Image (cartoon, rainbow over all chains, first blue to last red; front, side, top):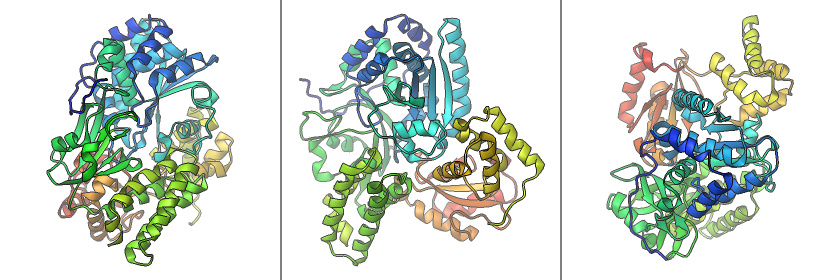
Length: 394
Length: 168
């Protein structure tokens, strides 16, 4: 087992994409089975945050029997503190388009969609230009694959894959029950591969250099590199590509302002890690690392000692209350009550023990909410309340 | 809300947009984007026309319009001002910036000034957290905004001297 808890920079994602034509024509001549095996052996996991093995996802859709299938690039980057997908689409769009076409070849899809976040409307003209150029080349090599942009309309929940399908079908973005999973019943009820922008960009790296180059980065269970959006109290906010598996302590050494009291890993739906846990926390997917290992869509927000964690939690809960689609009761009512509850404790209308009741409510939401939004409210809520209880009360 | 009478021209415009998308109910969101882009907002009367053209219920159109934060049923100002309330912006003081905008323009969030020049809105993370706190006027992005800068930002648009940053 490789042990590598050091912070190591990588440079694949934004490396030139000029050879996309070559990568595309080479890979669509390989057999789908070969490509799937390559992806599986790279151990690439979805970079949107959930971490589902990408190779398996493609395999399941490839095995589904249907004449019409779809490839969707999820560019509904809405997690507060995340801005990596925007950067990928504006700097290396051809990597994403190429990956979509290769995926189409693997699963047997002729249509691809990019679900672009409404707030990123300014990317549309350039992206459309790239798509035009891309489709021109596809025609030249006799590859039947079309890509269309679908504009989001400002709803965080649409980043959830089944809500995204609903939205594309012209409906309110309310998540569906799972199963069935998108691999057999996705957009328009057809087998669909839906991948995050960054995941697709990584498959480009894998198809270009082979699985081993990718697999050699990172640590066991968390292979490869990942983009991190660094914001908050840091002297160098921005996007950095780092190998997975680093310890949070190293990360803070590099990006902190010397006074970091906590880091929110994974945005509003992620976890808050207080200073005393920095050294035992690693960034990657669940596995046997030292201590806790946190998955992340890449948002790393640093807070220094001047920040009130009550305000941070208040902001997150306002966000969730606003963005809850309202379909299932645990999430719709739970978000409202959590927000009301912490405000009441702060004003002294409820005693401190009331926080324990709220923690139980958050836990209930985790088990009973229909989709990832409601289930993950407990992540930030519990980690903030448990670690900064006194700030919630006084 | 007072009832608005749509002109023949407006109705024609809506019908054209619907026809562009094949009068398909599944294209509702694309239709709404286009129509709002042309009219600036989507009052109930407009929704009724769209529902009829796409052969879906008005309730469904209304349901979608109110679900997504991009669609608005009230007209926006000539220069819509949006303040990011995402966490990164929030901890870096966007609330104070918002308060200053409210004070300078004497309007609340979701309202427009009397001359219809400015309207004020809150956004949830524009994906520019490195520049926090962020303010958008039309499509122009202002980064690291402090309450002291608010007056100058408004002044930029007051005398019609900001032609290039006009929203599309």
